[in-house]
Image 1 (cartoon, one colour):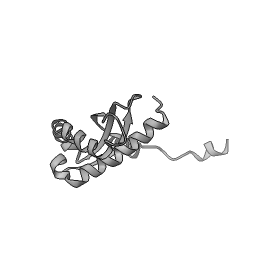
Image 2 (cartoon, one colour; image 1 turned 180 degrees about the horizontal axis):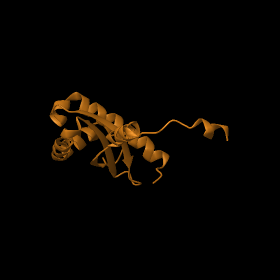
Image 3 (cartoon, rainbow, N blue to C red; image 1 turned 90 degrees about the vertical axis):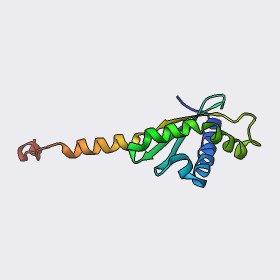
Image 4 (cartoon, rainbow, N blue to C red; image 1 turned 30 degrees about the vertical axis):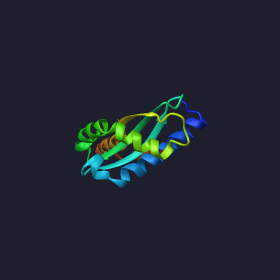
Length: 126
């Protein structure tokens, strides 16, 4: 789904602001995990922000998302304090796991594991 310039701009602002909120007290939200806000997609009416997070180590992802779901209203309140004067409605927040890095790592391992024989000299001449 293609987003309008307004959605993209607002999403970037929310991504920046959430990063700042999470940086102030990362252990409160994530424990000992390293979390990166990798992207934000906005609904057309700007009422919902789909926030994509990358979590390291991967094994802690479930706990991180459980904790964030419990603190979603707190995060939204902090976000409202940052953007409240710029918008009429602070968007609802939905957190999603961004597993792009994991998938890329799997693909790298698969490619590295391939046994590709060298090209035959006769094939190159034809």
